[in-house]
Amino acid sequence: MLNTVYRLVAPGRFEVEFSDVAPDKDVTIVRPTHLSICHADQRYYQGLRPNAVLKQKLPMALIHEGIGDVVWDGSGQFDPGQKVVMIPNTPFETNPCIAENYLETSKFRSSGYDGYMQDMVDMRPDRVLALPDGINPIVAAFTELVSVSTSAVRRMKEFSHTKLERIGVWGDGNLGYITGLLVKYMFPGVKLFVFGLNRNKLADFSFADEVYSVSDIPDDLWVDQAFECVGSEGSRSAIEQMIDYTRPEGTLSLLGVSENPVGINTRMVLEKGLMLFGSSRSGVRDFEETLRLYKENPDFVTELNRIVGNVIEVKNISDMNKAFELDRQSPGKTIMLWNK
Image 1 (cartoon, helix red, strand yellow):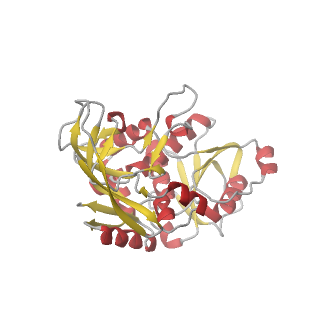
Image 2 (cartoon, one colour; image 1 turned 120 degrees about the vertical axis):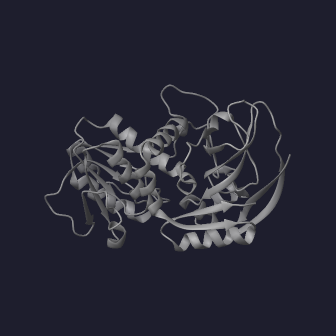
Image 3 (tube, helix red, strand yellow; image 1 turned 90 degrees about the horizontal axis):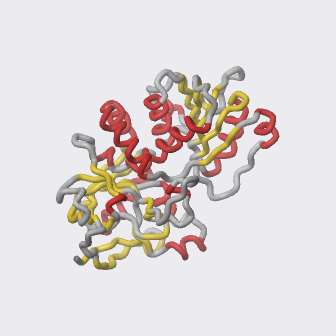
């Protein structure tokens, strides 16, 4: 089967290339229908990664958040036309001590090899999950991002001590919103504090118990555990505040991506006996948990829909560029209706 692939060959420039997709018993072929643009995709599109990285990675089809319809499934697990979520992380080994998304041998779509900006995507059957009936496809398109937060919140529960009364989330963007929402659904009864820069964005966190500007935090405020969802140059100040306001032996989860090294006040980390851990990407387990939350909590999906900023129909390369340009100007998630 002849497949059309839309690869980024240089910042801001997509080109069409062709490949063969062969039906096989070990392959599930998916036609993408809804694709979501991630900050990582934008960094490639805008040329914000180091030149050495761009030279190594490009040309490459972008996008690792998306859903689609099954065209062919050699495993017999899926029916033609069935709606599925595509899992971008592809492991090639198992390790009892290391999750699939941290294995050095794993590959990740739109980071080293082609993502979902294709007419058809050939997947391993274990990299595809059926989407529950009735789930909003616009929200389902960024399930991968939600699953990353799901992984971080789950690991927080595994790593932290038993006291989970007050949790803080630093970051008022999409990742902070999703993580905070997950905290409320996965830890019922926990008091949630959200800290950010933009008061208008903070007003959207209606599910939080308290929201604060990072420049106006009460001196006597404290949390048991904290999540950093800021990234870039803001990571340093966010982590510094987390260390200051987290009680002794608390756990700090780092999710924000920064290109440059971030300074950390190790003296206070040692004095308080804090644990810091990083979370990146996700695996099948996290996708399954996220889909379960979708199915059992319709309000959760409704709340997630609030962060959608743009929905744009994409038929050609001009539309692709338009979608990425709109996304860079909008704080919300941009969803491409992939009508290729």
